[in-house]
Length: 181
Image 1 (tube, rainbow, N blue to C red):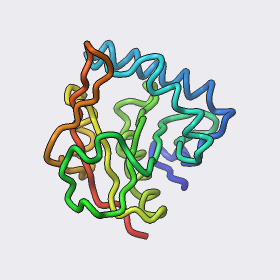
Image 2 (image 1 turned 120 degrees about the horizontal axis):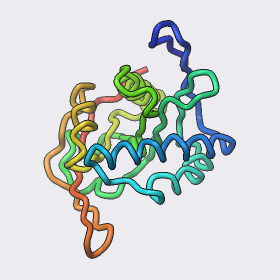
Image 3 (image 1 turned 90 degrees about the horizontal axis):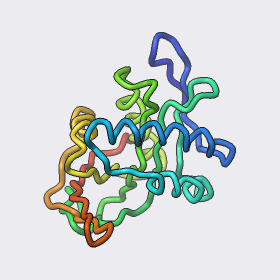
Protein backbone atom coordinates (compact mmCIF):
# COMPACT_ATOMS: atom_id res chain seq x y z
CA UNK A 1 0.00 0.00 0.00
CA UNK A 2 1.65 3.25 -1.14
CA UNK A 3 0.99 6.85 -0.15
CA UNK A 4 2.67 10.21 -0.68
CA UNK A 5 1.55 12.05 2.49
CA UNK A 6 4.43 14.31 3.50
CA UNK A 7 5.58 16.77 0.90
CA UNK A 8 5.51 14.17 -1.85
CA UNK A 9 7.72 11.69 0.03
CA UNK A 10 6.65 8.14 -0.81
CA UNK A 11 5.70 5.87 2.06
CA UNK A 12 5.00 2.20 1.77
CA UNK A 13 3.16 -0.13 4.15
CA UNK A 14 4.40 -3.71 4.15
CA UNK A 15 4.67 -6.75 6.37
CA UNK A 16 7.72 -6.58 8.62
CA UNK A 17 10.60 -8.98 8.04
CA UNK A 18 13.13 -10.44 10.47
CA UNK A 19 15.78 -8.15 8.98
CA UNK A 20 13.70 -5.21 10.30
CA UNK A 21 14.15 -6.28 13.95
CA UNK A 22 17.26 -4.21 14.79
CA UNK A 23 15.73 -1.03 13.35
CA UNK A 24 12.33 -1.78 14.95
CA UNK A 25 13.90 -2.20 18.37
CA UNK A 26 15.92 1.02 17.97
CA UNK A 27 12.81 2.97 16.89
CA UNK A 28 10.78 1.61 19.82
CA UNK A 29 13.60 2.28 22.29
CA UNK A 30 13.29 5.96 21.31
CA UNK A 31 9.48 5.79 21.53
CA UNK A 32 9.72 4.30 25.04
CA UNK A 33 12.16 7.01 26.13
CA UNK A 34 9.83 9.69 24.73
CA UNK A 35 6.84 8.13 26.55
CA UNK A 36 8.72 8.08 29.87
CA UNK A 37 9.79 11.71 29.42
CA UNK A 38 6.15 12.61 28.63
CA UNK A 39 4.84 10.97 31.81
CA UNK A 40 3.44 7.84 30.16
CA UNK A 41 5.81 5.10 31.44
CA UNK A 42 3.80 2.10 30.25
CA UNK A 43 6.25 0.38 27.88
CA UNK A 44 9.69 -0.95 28.71
CA UNK A 45 12.56 -3.00 27.29
CA UNK A 46 10.37 -6.13 27.30
CA UNK A 47 7.06 -4.83 25.96
CA UNK A 48 6.58 -4.28 23.09
CA UNK A 49 10.01 -5.20 21.68
CA UNK A 50 10.10 -8.83 22.76
CA UNK A 51 6.88 -9.52 20.82
CA UNK A 52 8.08 -8.34 17.42
CA UNK A 53 9.74 -11.62 16.32
CA UNK A 54 6.56 -13.61 16.98
CA UNK A 55 4.48 -10.94 15.24
CA UNK A 56 6.75 -11.20 12.19
CA UNK A 57 6.61 -15.01 12.19
CA UNK A 58 2.80 -14.84 12.34
CA UNK A 59 2.61 -12.26 9.49
CA UNK A 60 0.81 -9.67 11.58
CA UNK A 61 3.39 -6.90 12.07
CA UNK A 62 3.30 -4.05 9.58
CA UNK A 63 5.86 -1.31 9.03
CA UNK A 64 5.27 2.01 7.32
CA UNK A 65 8.49 2.82 5.47
CA UNK A 66 9.97 5.96 4.01
CA UNK A 67 12.62 4.49 1.72
CA UNK A 68 14.60 2.25 4.13
CA UNK A 69 13.45 3.98 7.32
CA UNK A 70 10.68 2.73 9.64
CA UNK A 71 8.23 5.58 10.19
CA UNK A 72 5.56 3.63 12.09
CA UNK A 73 4.67 0.06 13.01
CA UNK A 74 1.70 -1.90 14.34
CA UNK A 75 0.44 -5.45 14.72
CA UNK A 76 -3.00 -6.59 13.54
CA UNK A 77 -4.06 -9.45 15.83
CA UNK A 78 -7.10 -11.71 15.73
CA UNK A 79 -7.65 -11.47 19.50
CA UNK A 80 -6.68 -9.37 22.50
CA UNK A 81 -6.55 -9.98 26.22
CA UNK A 82 -9.43 -8.13 27.81
CA UNK A 83 -11.67 -8.28 24.74
CA UNK A 84 -14.43 -9.78 26.89
CA UNK A 85 -14.09 -7.06 29.58
CA UNK A 86 -15.66 -4.26 27.56
CA UNK A 87 -18.95 -3.93 25.67
CA UNK A 88 -18.27 -3.58 21.95
CA UNK A 89 -20.81 -2.10 19.53
CA UNK A 90 -21.34 -5.53 17.93
CA UNK A 91 -20.10 -8.31 20.22
CA UNK A 92 -20.35 -10.85 17.37
CA UNK A 93 -18.72 -8.64 14.73
CA UNK A 94 -15.56 -9.90 13.03
CA UNK A 95 -12.73 -7.79 14.44
CA UNK A 96 -8.98 -7.33 14.33
CA UNK A 97 -7.06 -5.67 17.15
CA UNK A 98 -4.31 -3.14 16.57
CA UNK A 99 -1.45 -3.62 19.00
CA UNK A 100 2.04 -2.23 19.58
CA UNK A 101 1.18 0.88 17.54
CA UNK A 102 4.07 3.32 17.46
CA UNK A 103 5.39 6.27 15.46
CA UNK A 104 9.10 6.96 15.04
CA UNK A 105 9.90 9.98 17.26
CA UNK A 106 11.68 11.65 14.33
CA UNK A 107 8.28 11.83 12.58
CA UNK A 108 6.09 13.09 15.43
CA UNK A 109 3.67 15.95 14.78
CA UNK A 110 3.65 15.34 11.04
CA UNK A 111 0.35 13.43 10.81
CA UNK A 112 2.04 10.03 10.58
CA UNK A 113 -0.08 8.58 13.41
CA UNK A 114 -3.28 9.32 11.48
CA UNK A 115 -1.79 8.07 8.21
CA UNK A 116 -0.67 4.79 9.81
CA UNK A 117 -4.03 4.34 11.58
CA UNK A 118 -5.91 4.86 8.33
CA UNK A 119 -3.68 2.31 6.63
CA UNK A 120 -4.40 -0.13 9.48
CA UNK A 121 -8.14 0.50 9.11
CA UNK A 122 -7.93 -0.18 5.36
CA UNK A 123 -5.77 -3.28 5.85
CA UNK A 124 -8.19 -4.66 8.48
CA UNK A 125 -11.01 -4.28 5.95
CA UNK A 126 -8.93 -6.00 3.27
CA UNK A 127 -8.42 -8.88 5.71
CA UNK A 128 -12.19 -9.21 6.17
CA UNK A 129 -12.62 -7.47 9.53
CA UNK A 130 -15.76 -5.46 10.18
CA UNK A 131 -14.14 -3.63 13.11
CA UNK A 132 -10.69 -2.49 14.13
CA UNK A 133 -10.36 -2.49 17.91
CA UNK A 134 -7.64 -1.61 20.39
CA UNK A 135 -6.85 -1.12 24.03
CA UNK A 136 -5.09 1.95 25.39
CA UNK A 137 -3.91 2.66 28.94
CA UNK A 138 -6.00 5.35 30.61
CA UNK A 139 -3.01 7.69 31.20
CA UNK A 140 -1.94 7.63 27.54
CA UNK A 141 -3.82 10.79 26.60
CA UNK A 142 -1.85 11.49 23.38
CA UNK A 143 -2.84 8.06 22.03
CA UNK A 144 -6.46 8.41 23.18
CA UNK A 145 -6.67 11.79 21.43
CA UNK A 146 -5.22 10.31 18.23
CA UNK A 147 -7.72 7.44 18.23
CA UNK A 148 -10.71 9.71 18.87
CA UNK A 149 -9.53 12.13 16.16
CA UNK A 150 -9.50 9.19 13.73
CA UNK A 151 -13.05 8.03 14.43
CA UNK A 152 -12.54 5.44 17.17
CA UNK A 153 -15.29 5.26 19.80
CA UNK A 154 -14.73 4.16 23.37
CA UNK A 155 -16.40 0.91 24.39
CA UNK A 156 -18.13 0.68 27.75
CA UNK A 157 -16.03 -0.86 30.52
CA UNK A 158 -12.37 -1.11 31.50
CA UNK A 159 -9.84 -3.92 31.21
CA UNK A 160 -7.51 -4.11 34.23
CA UNK A 161 -4.31 -5.75 33.01
CA UNK A 162 -2.41 -7.09 36.01
CA UNK A 163 1.32 -6.85 35.31
CA UNK A 164 2.44 -7.79 38.84
CA UNK A 165 1.42 -7.21 42.48
CA UNK A 166 2.42 -3.55 42.26
CA UNK A 167 1.23 -2.68 38.75
CA UNK A 168 -2.20 -2.82 37.17
CA UNK A 169 -2.83 -1.01 33.87
CA UNK A 170 -6.37 0.32 33.40
CA UNK A 171 -7.14 0.05 29.70
CA UNK A 172 -9.99 1.45 27.65
CA UNK A 173 -11.28 -0.36 24.59
CA UNK A 174 -11.80 1.64 21.40
CA UNK A 175 -13.23 0.52 18.05
CA UNK A 176 -14.27 1.77 14.67
CA UNK A 177 -15.70 0.23 11.56
CA UNK A 178 -12.94 -1.10 9.31
CA UNK A 179 -12.71 0.26 5.78
CA UNK A 180 -14.81 -1.87 3.49
CA UNK A 181 -13.15 -3.05 0.30
